[in-house]
Structure formats: structure tokens, C-alpha cells
Image (cartoon, rainbow, N blue to C red; front, side, top):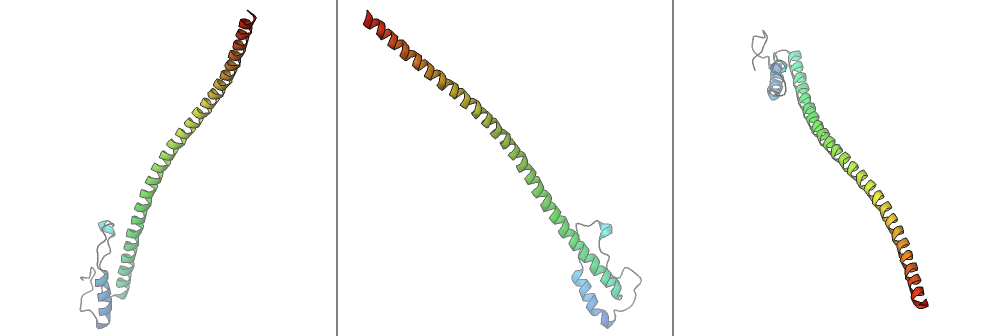
Amino acid sequence: MVCMWACAGAIPSGMVKYVKDVEDLSQTFPDLEQRLQPVPPCVSLRESVQVYKEHCRMAREFHQVKNEIAVLEDRKRKLLAEMVEDEKVAMEIAHLEEEFRRLTEENRTLVTVHKERAKQLERLCVNNRTRQDSS
């Protein structure tokens, strides 16, 4: 790794571990704008390496949160679509219930009229038989 600051000189032997850690973390983060990408640390400065590691950790966390947001937004979109469909179904059910009530009332009326007409027909038949019998 190349130090972005004026950190000339060889890497002290005690810093070799930090250099390896930094190399392990060396990566790009496509979700981040270029200006927000972690800047390679000055490996001879422990604090610089720590800042770099923290920046990389935050970039990974940002990526994870961004993915979770995308998943949740997709779920929200699906739930909204389901809700719209449920509302359509509810309106259709309400329409069918109203039609059922109307048809049930119409059926009651027709049954009542049918019974009345059947009684009327029976009376007419009885009256007709009575006339025929008296003639």
C-alpha cells in the first residue's frame, strides 16, 4: 500500500501486523461515492490504520443498511400492491353483499306474491267448481 501522506521510510517491524491487517481490508465500496471511499492509511501510524479500519467497517455497514433498505422498500411495494388488491376485493365483496341483499328481498317478495296468487287460484278453482256443481 502506498501512504497518501508524507510517511516516507521503511515500515517498522512492529507495524508489519498493521500492514497485513490493512491489506486484508483493502477493498473498494461500489455503493460509496468516490469522494467517500476509504483512503489508504499511512501504515506507519497506528492511528491512521485504526481510522482506515473504522472507515472500512462503516462502509461495509453502509452497504448492509443500503441492501436492507432496498429489501424493505421492495417488501413495502409488494405490501402496497397487496393492499390495493385487497381494497378491490373488499369493494367487490361489498357490491356482492348488497346485490345478495337486494336479490334476497326480491325473492321474498316473489315468494309472497306466488303464495298469494296460489291462494287466489285455489279460491277461483273452488268458486268455479261450486258454480259448476250448482248448475
